[in-house]
Length: 431
Image (tube, rainbow, N blue to C red; front, side):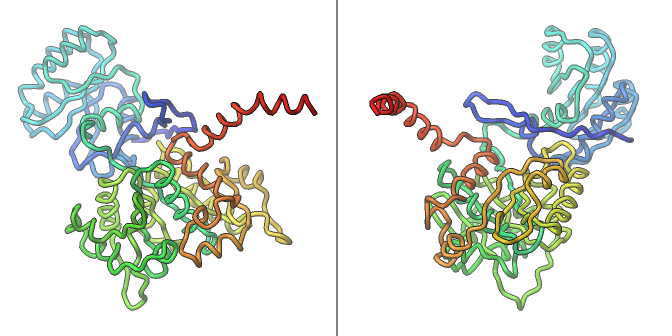
């Protein structure tokens, strides 16, 4: 069944706490359940089919059929019911309730039912809830509406929310993607005072241990070799704590081992990590593999680091184009131009990058070999080494943009400046 993808742009909403909430954040990953849908309207069927290929439903098994509630009644009179039934019906209130009563006779214990109807009627909604219907949606509905509904049914709001996953990858080797990842993750942990885990998946040549001046004995390779054994206790033993709020899943960085892990193993390890902290930053190597492609597609946000030259532009475009296909209901990847404005080097301008990739560059970080190299040699983040370095503010901007939080530092600074404004104005007049 063909569907047309609708790509989400940049608008976001404010929740009760004033935190930015993007439409794609309203739906969280769905567990391994079976979902069967029976539709009267082809457009609802297309929206469901569209939702079924989204990254949030990769673990779920979804099947979509036409025929509406009558087809569902006929089907379940002879077959067991799945975890979730979605019925789309054009029937009026009384007829709809009557058919749902007939459907209920065949439903197994534990099966949830979502109804998509045509009537925005409070009395009908109450009657449906009395009959045990899990949710009632009024058509027309889009794929994201359906995913949000399913997410609300199977993600308990009373438990800690599933953490956000940010995948960092370089458009080319040696462009500083790991440096960007580590500094942004450290900034998240320090500015927001919340727990962050960095997963270094450059298993042979990862630099997370060096950048944070750590020499862990165990790390992410042990988790990947037996993902089925990974639980909260083992995770705590394998993580290396770098500060109050930052831990690293360090790479082994040895060459006498083969690192051939399945995409499923990588996904399992990241899933366990995201259940324990609000933010997980994945430091992906530039090499392309099945598991790196899977983790990119499954991440909540993607950050591509590129140097302003032609090869980086081509590679970044290839990654972005691929992600458009596999992440139809998500925002585009973010792009950071690193090592920019290097003297005597011919560079592609920011505007040309944005036009070629059809997106806005998130940040431009100027070439500063002295500050970055000394910080790396010291095993420090840039802000620890030199809080006045130009890139420090860029890392704060990126961290706040990714987490959709407000930078309280800049707000305090602005409030101080506004408080001093009358005094400064008087001094100017005296002069």
